[in-house]
Length: 373
Image (cartoon, rainbow, N blue to C red; front, top):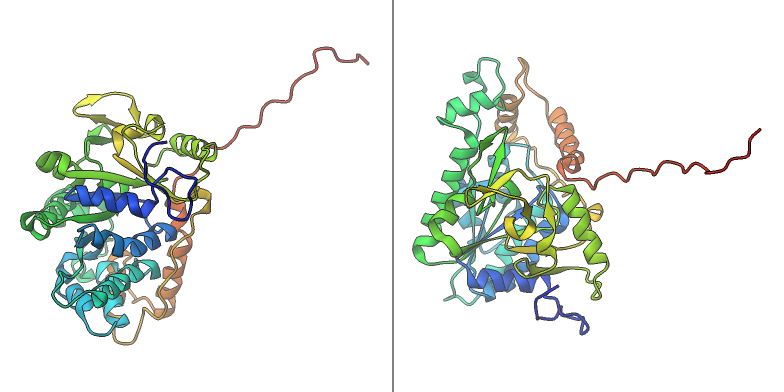
């Protein structure tokens, strides 16, 4: 595997550390789209820990889909405050999906950004986290006439188009206004399917559009796609990568690597349906991403943990109304029920993650010559 820089603390390795690779890549591009599976604790902690090195490389923004853009002023105020305010941090995630996305590791990213700003000289540019989230449901249950706001047709009607496409244009516009026009740099943390650049994915025979597709058309080589191991949901490719890493002489625990000229870039991707530059072709990892972030096998993934004491007397009415829009019923949900739903959602996070292919048991070999009875 390529890359000349040494992993810190390991004089025998020629691989870059994951943080050093991401910082170097982000320092050479205006945007790095970092694709992930939602709710992987190790990946979110990595982002939080990488902020100082990203800032040192000239990256002054982290953009993500995990807070709404309508709350940007509150987010800016939180990260520039003299003291850390946990309750204001929680409000940002409640604004996103009510009780649906209240995980400690994502809050710790915001706290890491706040800590970074507190350490900077007074005349230095502050580090920002930019919210790309767009509410994709009707928030007032009285408008729904007993229907669920999670119904695809209802969301499409309310938004005036397919919510996936509307969200892609929404995110691209925010990144253009908040980062690109001012000549700044950003790492953009998104679910993997939103970060495709040259790759156009197909769903049910129809080509999709992602924020990465739009930005790549506008910016070309100014945007790069990096993915965490396991973010490209192809079980065969995941297994092949893990086999290659296990056999690598460096035996690294974590690293970042460019896929263009590396062995990992040759790994075939068979479960992703899509085209490159308008042509349908067999895909390899180097076709679907520019860089790869390895933090360990997917069987070692841990789910993000819940923030405690999210539902309070002050926010219960708002939280309950939002959840009832998603899962309508005549009587209001109770605080106990909402807390149970929140904890059940956390337990189900791994259900959306990719799995390695099952190993088929070889059929028992029949003896060529068996003793006849």
